[in-house]
Length: 220
Image (tube, rainbow, N blue to C red; front, top):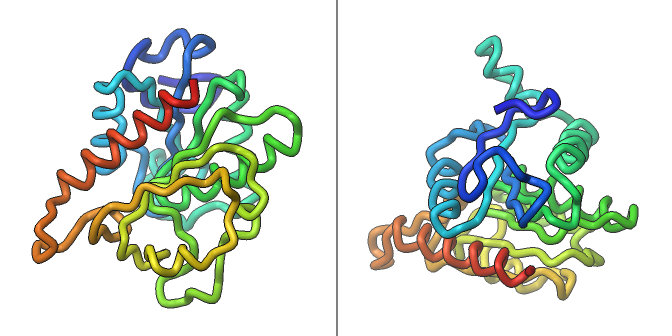
């Protein structure tokens, strides 16, 4: 469905209508996969079944790929932030939206939330599925500066062995007290555990889905 030039996929109560009443979770994709990737499709559908209204959208570079089939790298941060600002404007009011996404999508959502808060029109919350705290193998290159003073409630759903930020690494970071974590045992960046852990991907994903639904509900 297209809303003011932005293509969305909707799941959960209300479908694509009535977005000015009730809470909506808006999810952006990661750097390399579209909004209808198996990961986001599973999470959006399951959250919808939990009674959470979910909207998905694509950043300009990914929307362009869908049109002409040409692979592109992610847009620069100002373009990604502008896309989030437009989505918030389309689906708002801002205080009824929880914004987030997979990896890069969640990171840019947290930056958009910080900007919205500074502008006096904060969103209700942020949900990040696998936050990229640093590039794999480069723990010194942190992407956390804006998270130190974040005032918006934020849930980070993270695999304990995520190469973008493990449980032990993140414990050392200077982060806002408004940021909460749901650690998934032995999960990687896609929240998937190894067989030897005794956990399954489905167990981790269902734990993540339940945790997100609870977080959104507690925001009121």
